[in-house]
Length: 223
Image (tube, rainbow, N blue to C red; front, side, top):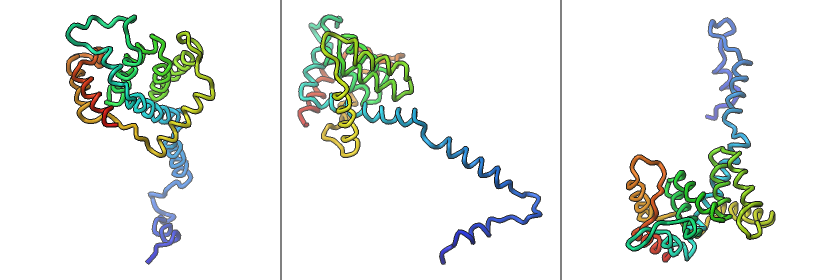
């Protein structure tokens, strides 16, 4: 038998002379306040959107056919000297940062994005903008947006139409999915191995190595 709303209200009613009489108005006010607390604010919604867009951009970067080749240029190994600013492969730093982000190392990703952005990568600056928005650091987020649109390298900054197109693309991928896959367990294992090699630090400043490059080559070859 269907229970009507009136029956439910009747069952919930307390006697008028009950010592535990409920203040209905106060209860409704508490419910309204609780609902307001549970409703995402504009800042929370913007942070969530930024995180989703950053995930899309990072997968896009990681799935590029030349991703492993670029990371190999910054990888450590026998016969390779120190990684200096003038010899930094900007795309390699960007790809490595995106891999770190997608495998659960956002602080490390921020470090490598900053290296890439400092060397002129607008894509890295955009990732930093989204990263700081996602963690609620609006001032830093808009600093990197300004870097992206005004004061980086010698190339022309992206115009508003390009950025709007990128946002539309990110929304489309979020809604419809993409062939740009997340890192495999084997690739994630290599990142965790590098992290374990820097004890006492939450940031992976160590360069990738040949073993990680090999796993990344396998990953991109399957795309």
